[in-house]
Image (cartoon, rainbow, N blue to C red; front, side):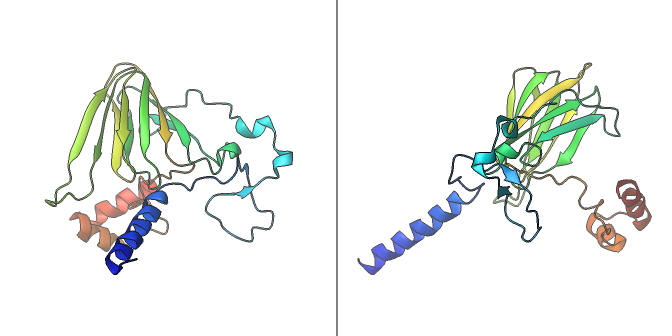
Length: 220
């Protein structure tokens, strides 16, 4: 094979490998019902597999995806169904969540570092949006929409997004993710434990250190 063709071939293999592993790995068996390692000997990217001969239908069932209590600080409640609470999802690369938001309530700005979100409106009206990472011109573009019953909206993996109930009734939406454990980062900057030094955040956000400490006290 000519050197030039060999270089192209290797490049394609590298890029293909990157694309293949950009999301959860493809399962190599029908299922891998997640169990905890009894000896806690090793942390793996996922969970350990239950003996398939011991698997039952209950391993693929979750009960309780019902209305959540929205009497919270932000007026919202998220019920997440991932591989931790539904072991049969392990290695399948998907999960979901139900989001209930009271009138005027907010599911605050957050990201899912390991999964894209597809949101389907079941009831109510939400103002939603996400912000891009750095574009070629150095800006961060903000995409927004008002969603009503039956609408579907996508928030790409790792991008900051939110949902605000601008209607007069409770809003309910179902969120599907391209990962069995999409993760969530919301108050990680101000809510880290132990906290990030106030002088670091003060300089980064151009805020008074007293205000930084007050915010941290509410979140930690």
